[in-house]
Length: 339
Ligand SMILES: *Cc1c(COP(=O)(O)O)cnc(C)c1O
Image 1 (cartoon, rainbow, N blue to C red):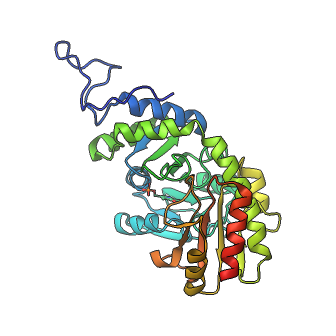
Image 2: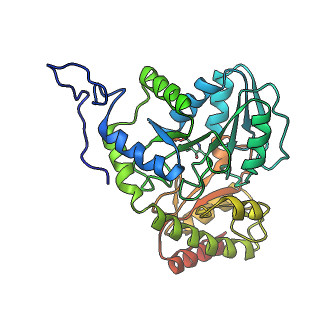
Image 3: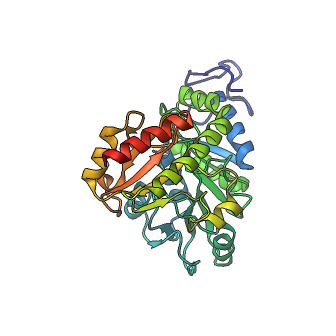
């Protein structure tokens, strides 16, 4: 349970001064944040360090582990690629669904499985073994799956890094990020980077996320069931050229999803003819909000090309919410008729 929101920047006995194991100043120490880190850490199976956003968490991983060169997914979250290009001296791109590449000469491999927005998966144990043999650390972006959908540390990764902004918090009302690891030295380095760099989550944001985690499994279950129904409707419709949902038996990522995911995320990616077709789809729907971000209570759709992703203009990332399944399916069928 989240407990109270400790909002003050200090929790210090002014007479005794700094005490070991007692919270001091709010940037290195905050009890509300520590409670959230204990909760996420339990689910990931490691020590958790939270950050102000998912990008702040990825930036910390790049700063602490990426100076010797990184491999990042060519089809992963666009801001991660942009940050690597801006920050790091040696960046290489590899596709998530490609074969395990050579990892010699890099210090960090960032995987994203499922990858956003294309929903390819990669074999995390195989990539981790190859990276470790080359002396590199492995981080898996666990944003889309959440720690109840996938445990990257159990699959051989050194770090699970995520945006909790999406399904983990799940109410589209907060930004947060975290890194989880079983390597105590690495956790110390990440905490030290955070204390100096300053990208801490606010106490109320930490509390909101912790409060939301009590319903995480219920939300994932409904989102996943809705996605299963919606993916079938989309796949059967002539206006839709391609559907990706790793829970469908015909999906290229299905076998990996069965091995690595406890819950298949509620995100379905599909392709209509062009931007005008997506506009007609969104205008005709009464339940789907056009919005970026994903993983919330409400079904949202995002046309990813508008953000600069290298995808067709008619590609839609649909994030299924927790609406009644029959209502959602009926709404999508009507919207597809308008397309
Ligand atoms: C949203 C997202 C991020 C960045 O998270 P923020 O909380 O928006 O900073 C990183 N990785 C993936 C896969 C994401 O979807």
